Image (cartoon, rainbow, N blue to C red; front, side, top):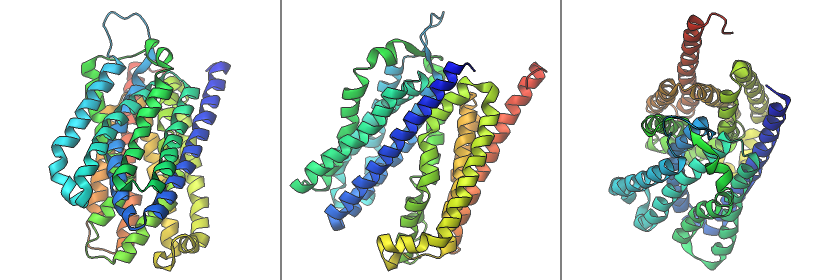
Length: 417
């Protein structure tokens, strides 16, 4: 790796990490403002937001494949797939899927205002596909400055619209549009001015048929990721019909609060890590092991802090009804390392083009998590087991896929290190 490559990688890491931190702070600010401003109506907005990001979590698989496949434009004998055509087709498909499936889930999931919330949810799904394709191209072409602006402005526009519309009393539906419109604003403000840099000078390295097959597999894996990350609170609610409502609320709140430092941070850096694994294959194994060690160290330190102060901190933030045992707060933090590990290993597998192993690992993770959460045992115990065991099962699949590929390469070339 040249010194210029190293410098560029470091600069990209700093920019993307800084933008992610700023966006995270902005996201917490939006959540706090809406919770205080909407009161009892916040629950409906939170359900809409959860539904939107479950869809977004699945569609983020498009970003991963675009980031992996984007290369500088070259003359090739076979015309490769276009990011623009892929994005427009996937956006249309996502919107149709949301609309066609809506009778199955809108009345029960979104309540009395569900049908009014369907249009912003549908528009949000379509715009998010375009955003993920654009972000994937930014990762693939190492357009770090544009990407950082892309990440920050998305949250900044949303925060601005919420602050303007909330005092006007627009209600949940109006605020739902405020959550979705920033997708389009960022596309206009960031992507269009950088059109030539992003799209005219780059292309995908596969045909439409191949990229469609790859996207289907990465989307399946991303949907499974959403089950263990953004969708896990919904899984808790679905599997906790006989549990104490106060305990369920406390667990969901603690889950959101304590796992974000490791899980959300690793999730946000997947695009960056993917291009690092793709572009620097000789050092990919060392990078993966270093990240494993870093995540483990962070989890141990944060878990110890959570055991000592976590329960009281949660009570200070949310009230005595949200008190949980210290061991459980520590367990939520500690088990987040397993999710971080599978994200890193999965990204390494995807960078090698191991779409089958990547998808299989995440799908198996989701299945194991669902099975454990349905066991007739205490909520604290089964959620700890699901969050700790399920990602490790998927991690084993990803590692096995990587080892098999390495073995095939060694057989083909004995000098492969």
